Image 1 (spheres, rainbow, N blue to C red):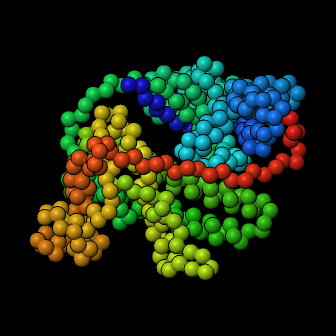
Image 2: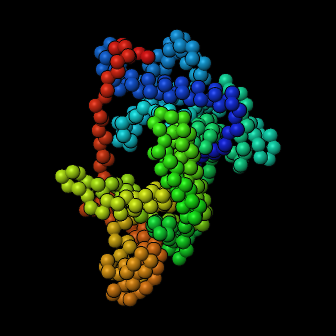
Length: 417
């Protein structure tokens, strides 16, 4: 089995290299937005004129003409611009397949990245902690080598966030498919206890460190609100707040990676609840005619759910388990916290509090999250119900809708760049 893995490292570029990377990222963003606008606003004119649909091939041909006319576009590596066109192609494919919403333009400082094949680059190890990577038209840039890079490197991505520039090596790793003989476990995700396992153990986010960073972010947000609009102090306050939020996200992501790796290495069968995090964290404001209730309490719960990173942990656990030969099963979350793991009785009165479960039928008492994890494991080990006819039912995918496009005032009706 061939699996793709990404290995991310911190880049330490000098001022000249950072300026070049920023320029190239801006050119890639411009080409992406221009290709998106061409497909969005001028596809009818292009089809009426040429009789063909706009595709990656046609846009790549236009990109060649554009590079011949505009020097600052020709200055960027052509591979990075071609990957931007492939991103547009993939975005529309996902939209028409119902896997994503309608493609949106990329914004400055939010999608600053360039990508190129590894054949145009190379990386060299300097010592146990440092290495250099060759970036086309930039030169060799040092990065912190925190771990090995196994497999065959296919793509190199250089991106920037609030914490600086990073390089990501996308590799192909061949792993044998082997069935796992490790034990099974059920996992209940919560707000008070982040992960509760059916074996009676718990995994909790480092809330002390997160609370410090979140308190700092709130103070910085208040300071930002007091700054004069358009002033240099406002821009500096924005950067400071963005760095704090990036640290919070990095801490949560690192913890989810560690816990997912620990569970995937220990257990071969994992059952979790099929939670719709997007629906669970929807706003309770309502409308003017029908205003919502307990809006402030619901907003606090939404922040706690998003801070726990339930969906991120599920994504990490899924591919790490697959690499280990394990199985991830998602069960219906309905009444799992109200069902007794001893007698199977379901009653909402059994959930005495956030931490205590006491069955009203048999009197069984234990930690509520531990009880829910055992219930989830038993539900995951049961075979899926099959309707009459012998075939399991398939849910129809939700059809995506396209918003009305906005016309450009400067693109030519011919449909080219």
